[in-house]
Length: 572
Image 1: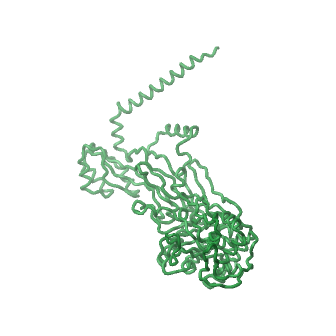
Image 2: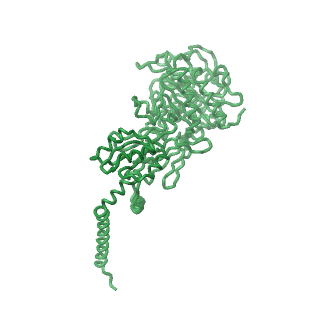
Image 3: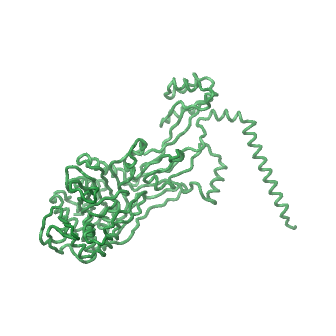
């Protein structure tokens, strides 16, 4: 039999016409013939069929045992509403409803009297599951519940800068993440509105379309953070105590795993409650200073200079130089913190006593080009590519200067401004065997389709050799045991590698204010197999000159907490 394409086309057209006719007839039956019946049924629905209700993926903290704790989720509330135009007996309705939930009688009857208005809200239920269930059992024409979802942050201020928050756009229409993880992972967390009532066949067709055509929110999901809530709370409490004792404009801290780059805790003051973000008048408080602000860190940079000198082969811990208390370069006099000369000293002493002249000596032995190469290799002046928005790269133009004095100041942490996260990453390389790791706050993404994307530790590059890492660690342990507050803060059964930093603050006129400081402190432990690195800083503390006095207690309080909380075995 000969194939006739014309007949086939006519048959397909006939099928399409018949199908369209059936659909039109069905719609006519629903909307016209039985329209009043269905409208009355809708008015009796327990939950008003809101077409698009706010929906969004969850964010979780990860406890030390792997359990997930809600960091950001959705809470469902219900508006109690009436259609005054069809409400037959307002008094009876009020009596029924007020027996279940609290209603303002005056408000109810005032709105019930608006018979020309088809919609009036008469109350709200927040979290009252029992009330909602009882109201659902009622069959009252003209009364309905309207479901509403809102973003909630159960831990309030904990890791608020990491989380960010969700708000409507400037046009007041669409919800979206504005800071932190909420913004960084907007494409994952965003979901198209969930319908209260979903047509089964329409949903199937939609899924098929998304599979073959793309689009929609098929790649949406939940985000699991590496942030440990108990640890982050401990960090926040130490910062609050620091603020209470010494004041200061701002302060912050990071607890990171040197070997993986996973951030266990991150906090900064002033902070905010993302549940109440709309009440904040100063929007700058929402910026995360850990990744967005840059500071001249001072002497916490000195171990990087020492490590560079050792790795390049120009010094060892026992190498000596003559300390005259100052150095004059390009017409500028640079002194030690106390201006004192100590004669012939070795590099261990230079690090332990935090001598600026010692770091300048190392830089000069290396040469400007080699010194700069190492500083850049440690990632100073580049973004860490952490999975948070708004990261700054840092200001390190001194490393390209034609003046030797600029390299000299950089060697002891002045004249270069860095983000706390970039410094924590660089210092982690001292303890992890010499590797620069990518810092992360997200452990995994759980997609709605069932797939899971895990974050694997990422090595950016090798900066120093394992042998250099071990030698610098040994030197930093000796700094803690012998020099830090006279050796009074060392831990009996644990070796801690640490260093403080006290930097002069810029006076806003191109110079430095000798009465105002930025204090910083870093340390990792157990020193030769470090589980954690803690980095702390505070800007402009009052009544205290050196970081050893302001930050030693917070650091060791956190170290002891982590040792106990994670049951870390002693290493000496």
